[in-house]
Each structure stands twice: as structure tokens, then as C-alpha cells.
Length: 145
Image (cartoon, rainbow, N blue to C red):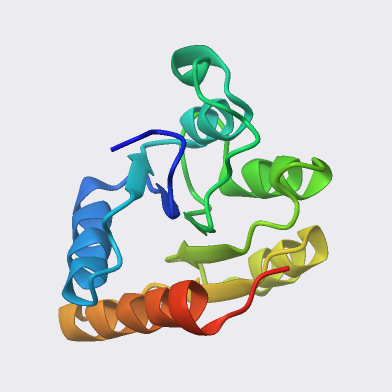
């Protein structure tokens, strides 16, 4: 896969949740050009073509970012803040997909410009359904600018 042609950037530190998300998107044939990064620092490196991703073209942005909030190194709120503060990335739809149901996280995410906030369902089938629905909406139904 060409690292510049990414449809979905999955920012998730939990390997089990990343696998479930990937499996759900595969069921709907939405995972062909997906990159999984394991923490907020790696997400920022990917998006802004620094560190291990310095060879990437930063003008080529993902069509969708699925973002966890609770991550090591750089948390999801800081990643969201940086995404929405930069001209090249601020129009990318960002869906927070997190286990947090705290009101302050929801309010802060929307203040920072998140496009959608989804709490990860605990049950396997509900998780798969939620991610599949998200993928279908953001990749096929939604019309980006």
C-alpha cells in the first residue's frame, strides 16, 4: 500500500480494539487503505510527515481519522487539537472512538472540532455494528468538502 493513499487512519493503542475495528471495516470492504498507528505521537508523525513518516507527503491526508482518547505519549485530545489547528488537516473528518463516556470528554471533543463522538460498545457484536456503520457513513455516504 502506498503510505500516501490512506483512506482511514486508525489511532488506537489497544491491539484488541484495533483488531476489532479492522475486522468490522473488512466486513464492509472499507479497510483496503487503512493505517493503524499505536499512539498519539505516531499519529502526529504520520499526519505531519515527521519522524518515521518523514518521507510521506503531508498534503496527502486520510479521508477519515478514527481516534481513541486515552493513549500514551500524546493523548487523543492533543491530537485532535493539532489536527483541527492545521490548514492541511482541519477538514479531515475525525471520529472519536473511545471507551470514555465522560461528559467533559464529549464537550471538549466537540469544542475542538470533532465530527462525531462514539463510545465503544462493550459487547462484541455491538462494537462490530457500530464501527461498520461509522465506516459506511463516513467513507460512502458523507460528502466531504
